[in-house]
Length: 313
Image 1 (cartoon, rainbow, N blue to C red):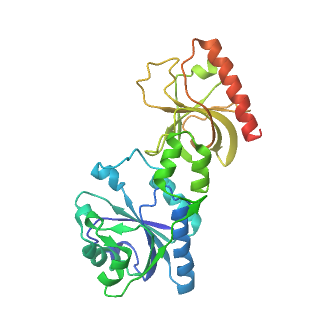
Image 2: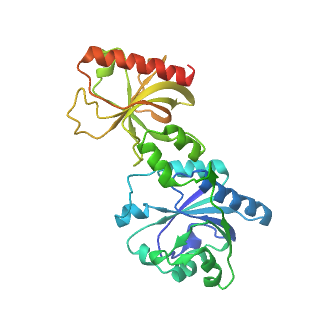
Image 3: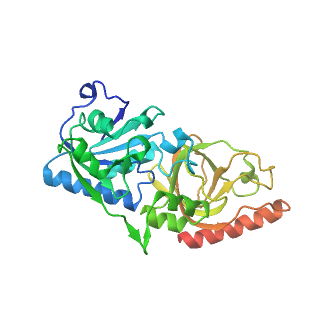
């Protein structure tokens, strides 16, 4: 898959990538949850039937981040994660439209004539609630008319699970409530945080529970503070573990930013500087302050035993 960053207007796009007729799924696609994947899979089906490459057009930074509106608190899938998932799905091109305050003012007509037409979009595939252009004035139906009938449009129905519409907002709510299992169900995979193992205060080693302190590689949605059973990926291997997301109130005043600290089962080697991933499996309990080290150690032991049972390790 080739990733191309687009800056509006698309001057000289033909010099950046060999543009050809293509099927294009368009959307923010934060999370790439089951609803988003249903849109992209439809684009892939059309691409195969028409003999055309398939592209995804997404936008970065998130419009809510740029405009300071809504409940934006990070990404479910930062750009690197999104790229990995789209490549695994079989997408040929990922176009990343640079979202700026000026771009937010582009009219639907200009978006079609100055973005979709230069990219030679044959068919646009969008979700049922797709809107585009200034103030969201453009609709799926208007793409065809604004392109003079040159671009066909397919709209994909909402994806429902147990009667609920799968949506990024619902996944964010689930994560903030510690409902890792619902997030997994709606995403179609566990919620994953990727990052690099960095040095911490090394307190865990002194109490018999060494931890890997992971610095996230992107601005992720931070799940509810507390303890989780997790799977931990390193060098192509997967390990079970118990992770605390929070500020370690037993040792701090709670003023620091939340950390991701994982105690790995049956593991004993230095991995500082290694790139890893963490999949949330199940929430065990909220973070809390303990009266002392002995009480903390006893609780960690119970947490680890419960996590082992959840993970079957």
